[in-house]
Amino acid sequence: MSQPYHASQHTTALTLRGVARHFDNTQVLKQLDLDITEGEIVAIIGRSGCGKSTLLRLLAGLDHADDGTLEWHGAPLARHTRDIRLMFQEPRLLPWKSVLDNAALGSNHMVAHQALEEVGLSEHQQRWPAQLSGGQRSRVALARALAHQPQLLLLDEPLGALDALTRSSMHQLIERLWREHGFTLVLVTHDVAEAVTLADRVILLDEGRVALDLRIDVPRPRRATDPQVIRHEETLLAHLTGQHHSADSDRSTHGGSDDAPHDHYLRQAQVVQVSPDAIAI
Amino acid sequence: MASARRHPLEHLFNLAAPWLLPIVLLIIWELAADYGWISARILPSPSAVVEAGWRTVQDGSLFEALWSSTRRALIGFVIGGTAGLALGFMTGLSSLASRLLDSSLQMIRNVPHLALIPLVILWFGIGETAKIFLVALGTLFPIYLNTYHGIRNVDPHLIEMAKSYGLHGTRLFWNVILPGALPSILVGVRFALGLMWLTLIVAETISSTDGLGYMAMNAREFLQTDIVLLTIVLYALLGKIADLMAKGLEYWWLRWHPAFQRSRR
Image 1 (spheres, rainbow over the protein chains, first blue to last red):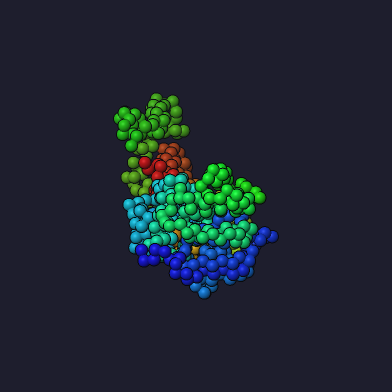
Image 2 (image 1 turned 90 degrees about the horizontal axis):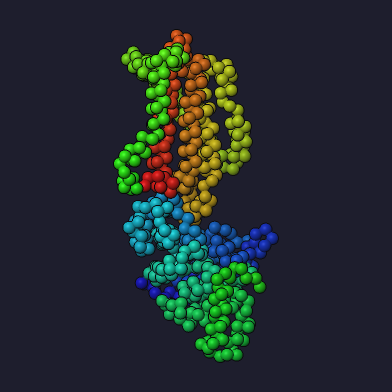
């Protein structure tokens, strides 16, 4: 409510310089430079093994960089672990704690109760996680993160296991909470549509480097059928599949984006979208 | 829910089913003893066993024996269980302790603790200490083993999550590690309770001046088969009670567990 479009403030919150991380002999992140503005939603996409999850773990303080600096408002990120919360790929709820106690992990019942109300689960706070649906469990995990009032919220493909309808309502919920709380949000996903629907900026990682930094200036709430949204999805898919040169020439040949060849390309692109991980360049 | 819709007789049958076979066997046994098919010295009738039980209740010897045995069992169980739990926590939580202790403990575990009876008698004589020591030794290992494995098998993802949400040290232990290991620890407790009675019976049979084992051995000397049978029935009952108590603990502590929620419905 207070800061609907924080991105306009242009305060750099997160600064990454020359960040490198390798496991055994594999260089997962190579000299990565990245600036993230306060209050911005940034989606990080890329194929499997591009280093997107490693990057998120570094931001969450679960792992340490071999080289380079990570700063949060000018101070080392490691000093700000209290301001940063990660929502994991799986909800990771403690099965022996009630919904309320799970949401209150590391905080207290009062803020947890409020957070559960915000995600629409206040009626279920005395239940066990085993009694909840997949979408409800994700919302408990979200409430648990919110209860800590993070300045930086990190989401690691948290919606991957949910069905399409639940995902879409989770998108709306996340967007609403972002508007109300004004945190900076970094989201890792392999779903191009999710990235374009939610993010102010989409960063495409390839082999440990930023391959594309795309600003999404589409007014919210965004609809999947919005031609602007579709065009951004196309651009990203073209980069992901390594066809961006041909895609550019395709567009320049045929002009505008509303003609038949475009539709043909979109269909092609949507086929690819089903399993981007399976594609090798 | 479903049982309410069923025929009441069917419901009654389901409740009675586990008891049918024992009741039928008891009737056959009683008839066989009454008609003299079996000698009372080999197998006295159930009614004779009940009478013998009533006699020991009246002269107070039953409760005296029960109390001595239960006290020994519980003292041994508390000592052995505490030691097993403590060792399990140590090896489960610290890889140094695990490297130092686990292989030795596994080696000792494989020695049947009842094989130590001659040694225990040499060390402690035939007094109270020897019996309590044997019970403690018998209950230590199941609890140790299950505590260790329970802690080692706590989902590392949950531990990582809890740490990143600011839980460390004792808070991490009480909120994540202990509850995560609890199902396994309770399995150890149930095993230990079974071993507790087994060890005590053997220890009391060998040498005692009181307790259920003494009562049985004393009755053997006077050819009181009914009392011998009575003690066997009592051991069965005590074992069942111990198991029910362990189940009760599981029911309360693991009420979050999907398996227990299913059985509640």
